[in-house]
Image (cartoon, helix red, strand yellow):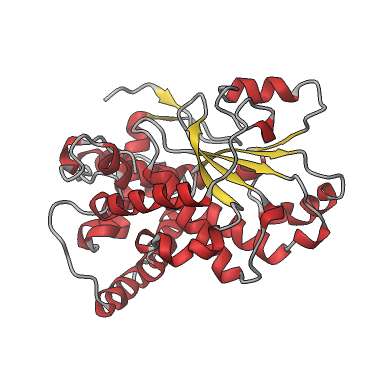
Length: 338
């Protein structure tokens, strides 16, 4: 393994670590969590790439990253985001307020289009459940060499009645705490002037890394076209964002796409043998995660980390790799990317 120093592509100040130092921290988080004893889906989630994202989100602090991962595992154990299906959220999706586009950006990243003015529900619970479904679907469709997505937010028709601090706060929580380092960039396209004061109100909910990924883009600004051209193939980009594709959102066709993706999801979370999921298993997972104690020191910040390099290497393949693998059922043939 190369000793070349690497820095995460994430925004914000971050430790500059060698590949060996990064792997040592990943091994230490894995040891503290005890991933070998986790149920299948949670152990699949705990790939090296997934642990690295939690570490990057916490500036490679093992204690903070372990706590974050523990909370995420408890959330996934109870919420079961990978089991949400189209029929569970179809009503929320009817207006096209959030959908995965049929194009990607120039880096191959999945694009989630959001139109807050198309809000059709007053249920925060329902809105967040649909957001989680969209996040899981976007991750499922990432290529093997990408782990982040793009949010493209269209403010056409947006007014004060569409503002909800509660939903915005919950959205930030889901994105930052349950899907760390999954957002590559969020483009706020043509937000009205009154949105900027609102954004100042919700800014404290955002971590610096997340805030730095937000770009305000205005159709009449000189540099806006360049921002969009640098990110997207303009022939594929929707006309609402300055592109050349005038095709609108079709709920019927979109529903077909999502149902097909739903069929792929179970294989993405299986390593060849099916383990039954029971309420008792959920309770056991929660109890075992609660038993994790974290010391004030970060063992991988000192020489002890070097001893961890001989630790267990993850053989877990991510749900994304499983989905994009030529043989979905053969997770061993895919590269770690979760």
